Length: 517
Length: 119
Image (cartoon, rainbow over all chains, first blue to last red; front, side, top):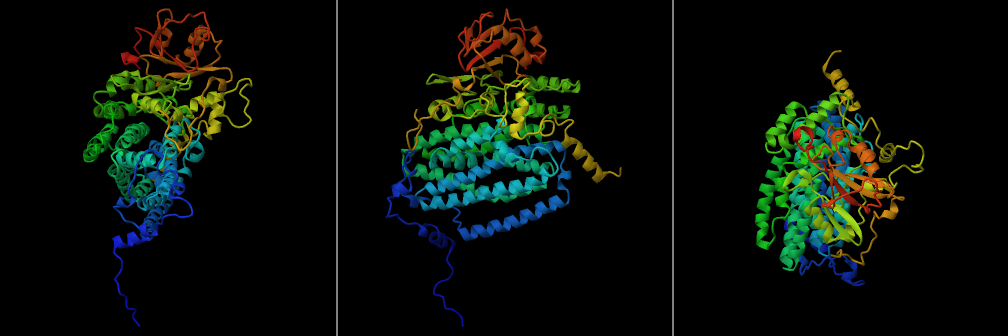
């Protein structure tokens, strides 16, 4: 017997309303203020949470269905990649170092993003953003997992992939992305949404994912390309959430504007500093380049970001004030960062090298006003010295910025030949920052940054040696002990690419695959 | 400005001098020599003679550079927190009044790095 139904299937909009907003209620045993203690302290005023528009209107059941479909495709590709020794299809073993940087520096952040969006979802009284944050939280943990799985294929064959989680909390340059997320996570839910949801996932995300994923495609790394594709449709949703969130805050109350603007200024700068690592990767670590960092910056920030801020102008939002500095920096930061990793290559969990003549010509062409004038002589000198057996490794720890935690490698806005020094005095202590942007952030909330876990200072305090180390013994080698504490194996994970195990193994294995002897 | 927080937000600084086992932090950069990507951080007892800093400690850090052997400390000039500063080579860093986390810039006129590139 056929069932007679009165009503046809629910439409998407109705289904979304029933399965999200319809599930919410006003608490009665406890006041709403106690249930949502983080909803108001940041000063953001929300009058009507129902005004939140979720442009995707995704419900949990369809979320499950779409994601499961994508996972099946992804894991089929990863299996094929593993079974066919896909790692031997990449352009050159130098490329592998780009994905080491990704696994150690980016993938753990996906996990922190998962936790952060879960916390934001818990803390918003409105059901619309709560559901959207829940889904983003699940996306982020999937991204962390799929990236770890994809890159685990490389861990079977190459050095430096073995302990990314341990390294994130210890290794000096990984404190840069780690402290960025810690800063966001330790703020309130609204600031988190501007920091990660808007600035990072909307304004800057193309500068992170496009270079890595296009870099993977250009260099024959199909495993990485596939997780990139798998994540891409989620990223579109994340961008929309970030944008919706900022519009919602601005539409709810005019008093929110100055708070939101302050966060945009802060988090654009914080994010751009972290992206220095991506710039370096694009210009130096990809054997087959996609585009220069400067070109990516011009397309994804200056053009696309410019259009976005054009749209937001009607709310009174201004372009982040750091833009002038960034326009100068785009000519320099990738070279400055690579010079830093090259000389601290003894303490990095990936290999470094100097560009070939062809690559230097490419850099000159892409950076006509800066590369030859400021960097070529230095790089050529290093390369020539390395050829003579005198490869340069700095033997002294660098001074770090109190806010971004990057070594003080950035130069003055009006003089690319001069390191930029900024300092602040707070309660009798001196604090040093790398730029006007970082100084401003420090001066605004000094109490937050005086606690910073700066790797260099921690080493000098004796906190970065394996348990039971006695630094007073004769012939104590602090660097060796720090590397041990990092779980970084000297001579395998670090030093120059030339002469590395990765280089030798890749050449041998590819030789077996392509030659008869 | 105070941190916007749920509760009273007071924490002690992570890097006060008492945590450095009798040492104090001193940062030194060498202008026009960007081969060294950033100023160096040292943890030194206040009893360290300034001459030892220049002739041993900085020499160990900067010695790779071909300009280092040409540095003449009698004509070199210094900046402390960006202001001109004149050290007495015979004194210790403590006697010279250098405080925890002070920053010095060494300027060596005439030495402009590899091929004059300020590297």
